[in-house]
Image (tube, rainbow, N blue to C red):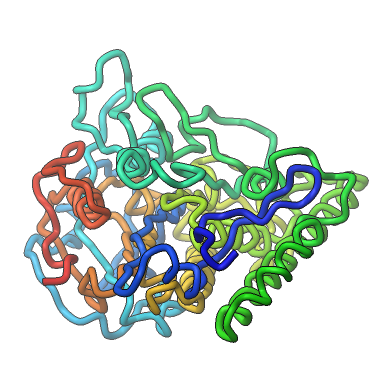
Length: 451
């Protein structure tokens, strides 16, 4: 058993499988000394932009903009046209939760996208976020939508993983008010959606089960006998890591059971909103995030996308700890002057979920001694620079992780008009792709890459 590959599966009855985490002894057996864990990539997408004065340095006292600005920012006097790099020191109110990880992130400002006239602003900002094709170059489509970055990268790094990519969504509602373009950021190509999974139980079964296993107690019990046999052959550090991993899987199972029971009880109550609106929002996001982290940790995939919520839907959510009743993020964003304090709370709430995942990844040690976060490019971003004005300029982008492959702890302000695709090209090259352009890129961001 000690010569097993890290990607080996422990198998129980009912067709259930459980992937192994990184274990030092297994990595040494398969790779020898000097082995370096492959880099992963994950994208954490936040809908409807952010409140600029809470997120962007130097904008705290700026007047809240009004109207649909599109790609016009010069009139605001907010965009610094000059390039600059400086240490990331004081964090803005929205970014404050990142303080414990400040040395492992880069704030990248000044990144723009070009809006193609003729389609909805929200739909285009989501669906084209990871493709950013040159406007009016995609035949037969009203969208500048091409194969997205995650699949381009997975073509290179996903050939030996069980899943080339995994698509996570935290939209629990079934009232499909909008089209698929508002609710998906991952696409195989123009018009070919890579459907995301929204139900934690469905994602759990996709990751760990090959057959229906409802009649059995739980997945960890099914494979426990094989697991214990393997544990006896491991060293102390690996036994501890193995136990931590199984404990995390059991915690995920418990969380799923709790939310499913809560949802069943809520369905019996007559609400104005769907029952899903009353589910604890943060708990749901963190549960889906835990599943993504496990998938990256075990090598089930090296590429993942994580969509916190859909664009523009007026569907309410109960942001636990913030409001007494479910609230619509989109509706609040269009009344920013009166609801700015509430919107700032939502932005910080989303940042806290991102930080939760970063800290969880930082606590997981990979076989090369680095953390899972060090071996992952984990990017926070949105397709709008401001939810109330629908601007495509100066998008809120934070890039975390990467270890010694990147230079971190800085604020990188790009020149006005720098395409977001320049960052995607940079990430693709960091992931090992030998390409010199992606979508509408004009170059790379050299200050992200370690010398």
